[in-house]
Image (tube, rainbow over all chains, first blue to last red):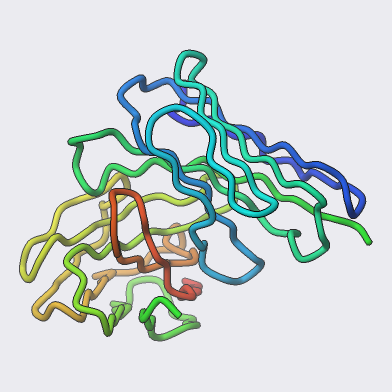
Length: 113
Length: 112
């Protein structure tokens, strides 16, 4: 079993839709949870950062962490064509090696005007 | 702008030749990383550095070496390139908390 599982999509939605992106993981030691956005032929950029469980909101984006279910989500409200990108989840355990950031394979999202 | 520059951005080379990719940062951060990204595999860590001359291996380090003689530069070397090393290589720096990585624009390497 992979440490981090992420549905690769592609996911296509109409403009204005609510998008839900998800990752599951197996390592209960993970404490730090990130979402990165990657536009085509660009480097990933950090979108959301969450420590431990709970919700975090930033504009149209909400990140949720459910450690009991080992499940994290990213919600995008009022999706825009500019949100079309690949979204990568990432996670790391507290006290682990600074190189031990594990990425999901990414979900490709397309928002149609 | 994350203050990271990768060079070259594109390179085509032949099997068996040495290749060096350079990552340069302007902000004096301690941690620097090299990842490769391939379809179906996502981002995988090759090597990382936690200071000048301090480096460690990642998940896919075989066939790669790194060096960091100055804080601002982290070099990735393929001693003898193989076709399986055709990939997009990303350098990253850790600016703040654990997991907060900022990536360069990538170096696209093709080994024929």
